[in-house]
Image (cartoon, rainbow, N blue to C red):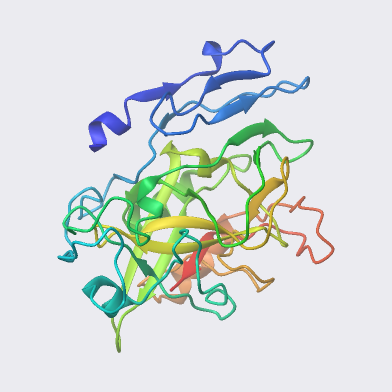
Length: 315
């Protein structure tokens, strides 16, 4: 789906019948599974934004996320194997035959390794086990009104450990745009921007900034937890721009709220600051002074009391 089609849906509070349990499919058919919204007795304002299941090109972005820029394999089997597939030989096998993530320890360190999937230029079948995130949402999720953390997301079915849950999709923007948006935020506004910093060889650093505030998917409603049940991995399908995929870090029960660590990890590590190619200490100091720490309400025994200043992930 191209960017123009993807951002054609706008969700407005006035469109909703607040007496219905499930008011609307938030994705308006853009996802293969409806994204449901449950209205509780205490009504809160639902944000107006454009739904897109995929990343879209935003201000300052120099690469169209929908453009195919990675080479593909020439496998003709229904599913690729490490014995013959150059995609798997180059980047390693990420999933088992059922599409479950194999290396669950990749988030234990301060860095994580990105996943590379087969894509449109590959000749393997659409059912290839190395095609997971690109298939989109497959689980029944519900957006609901939490007691003290605004809107949240919970699952309507059990999710086994290692299962792909959803993407954190939005506008891919430049660092300057990310910085400007953060400084322009009021004290009561939420910061949705996530920064991905990738190291490829000595001195080579690639940064990606994704903001789902104006254009995004169900992932924008996921709350932070200091003891999360999801973790994030950068996954490349056809583009050098990574997709920010969220996987189940443990077995998750029906009706359980889905959360991830806004600092980018799956363990309780200290929050990571906004990742920048700029090292000027004055810029960093002024930025920290301008942003106010918000109280964390996750309720975990290991709660750090404050939300991370930025959503960040290292790879």
